[in-house]
Image (cartoon, rainbow, N blue to C red; front, side, top):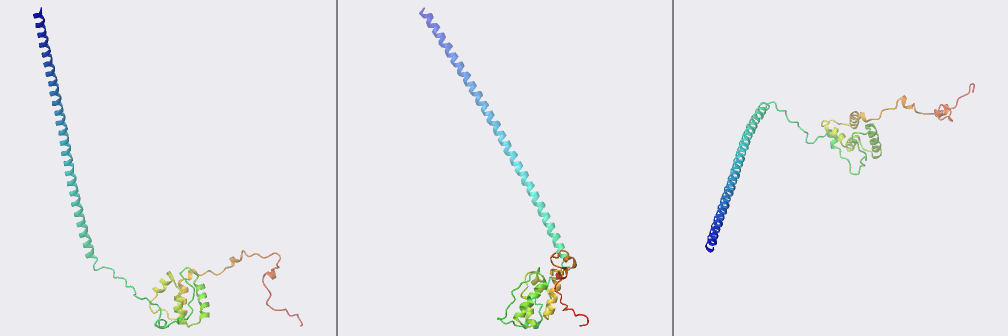
Length: 235
């Protein structure tokens, strides 16, 4: 009996050992398969990365070549434009417009007016004309102040010019040198230049809105009788 039990135990140990070896072999085989699969995945990822890098390098090379081609085209276009401009400059050298000569110190007054020295104690007019006011009214205001201050016509020319500003001064400077010889001439030129600023004279239809007071007779509304007292017949 004891020998039979021992034989059975020996068989069980052998079976267990075989089972363990089979399990170990299976795990080892599965591990090898897993390692092989992982290595295959790594190889696939490496191939994809290398392919992406190659494609990126190819795109960069293509962009670089396109940029070089564009730069070369721009260089040729600039060279052609430079040659065209040079040819235009050569053709227009003889037809160039002469420069406009600007007077260094324009002075429309005659030499007599220029030689007149205005005393420092003389009262300078306190009026200004910028080109939009009534020219006739400006001359009247100037004459009024000159009646108080006095002075000669030559002095009036310089003093009248001192009232100019803005576009009026530009007009005065544009006159030819030595053109103004007297104040009468100066004032006439001034009025003719700015005649559009003068107020228009009243016309008949301006009086249409004038109404007579009902309490005032028409004879009185016309104003006082300045013909003098009437003489009686036979007086």
